[in-house]
Amino acid sequence: MSTSQGHPQRWLILGVICLAQLTVLLDNTVLNVAIPSLTRELHATTSDIQWMINAYSLVQSGLLLTAGSAADRYGRKKMLITGLVLFGAGSLVAGLAGSTGQLIAARAGMGIGGALLMTTTLAVAMQIFAPEEQPKAIGIWSAVNALGFAGGPLIGGFVLDHFWWGAIFLINLPVAALAVVAVVILVPESKNPRGDRPDLIGAVLSTIGMASLVYAIISGPGHGWTSARVLVTAAVAVVVLGAFAWWENRTEDPMLDIHFFRDRRFTGAVAGAVLIVFGMGGALFLLTQHLQFVLGYEPLEAGLRTAPLALTVVVLNFSGLSAKWSARLGTPASIALGMVCMSAGLVSIAEVDSGGYAGTLLGLLLIGAGCAVANPAMAHAIMSAIPPEKAGVGAGINGTLAEFGNGLGVAVLGAVLSSSVASGQSLSAGLGTGQLVGAVAVLVGGFVAAGLLRRAERVSV
Image (cartoon, rainbow, N blue to C red; front, side, top):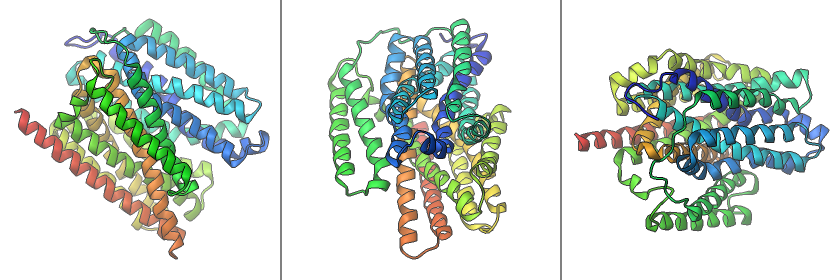
């Protein structure tokens, strides 16, 4: 539903869907701190650990577009409840798993629930808020993303200090149960009134294509970019995604309307989003190594010292300050300003006071301020360029870009680090080089997006 004033209980509903979103985001990072425990207690090999992490992200990234399309067709409330139930059931199986195989299967099941939650939460937020309040609502939704990034290692570290490894999954159960009850009572149903026929061929092709692409990217650093595993899965991804684009262009009821890409607002936001997440995802991956291997912090200490980034995002978005700045500056200028701040933050981490935490702290604060302004503006640009009845697909595109850009950033900047160290640089210098490459990608992404969005605004006037 959508009215000129928005839903009367829209802020309470936003709180509920952000709670659901938070459980998914925490699970993206919480497993990393449990790796030593899993290795010891389940006798997990390195390959097992990789699959425990990758089963979740592969299934989730592969299904995001399909999940968004299903939400538009069958009802966003129904899919939100389904996602919570699947995520909770997967968490229960994961928490009680007695073997690595059971845990990997449970993580894949959680990935299905995660894909439904990642798409429906943003789609519902777009439906219940009037256009003038959407930037602030998306800002809060984005702040929860930052909170999930920072909170995973902290919560995981705390739980593992007091309980066994399975507890990191079982803590999802009361949250998921509470969210289901709240969604049933509060969230209004909304779906595409046209009720397009399900695009089953598109769903299969997008799932196989995206999962293959993400798998090729995350396999590259470990197996080598020219290994048969990476080259074959990359080739499958290119062929299947090409077939997906061809099919979507000819079917009467496409899951992803290829004509969206003719909208300069959409292509500007998409191009910028990929480059920004590429730079940020890779640079933050390097940051955790910088804190532990260069500055010498333990994992929990390193997690605490990344918190200023998330706290800055939370303060600026929950207070509404970033939404006010964006409204005053306009979307293109907001994205450009945010990217300059984020890029400067990455340079600070790489170059300022490399022997201590001061330069890193300054960098984290700058990155947080940039994220708070730019990310909601980018998400709003993507969502507002898509018809409201396709909000689920829009959220699926937004999530897919984040997964793809983040995976690519970790792979490429990880490769920059490896080649820098192999060429005789110290680890510290190699990490700095990777951060600077990330800074350039973020800056280029910001100006590409801002330029395309500015041109789109001029054309539409």
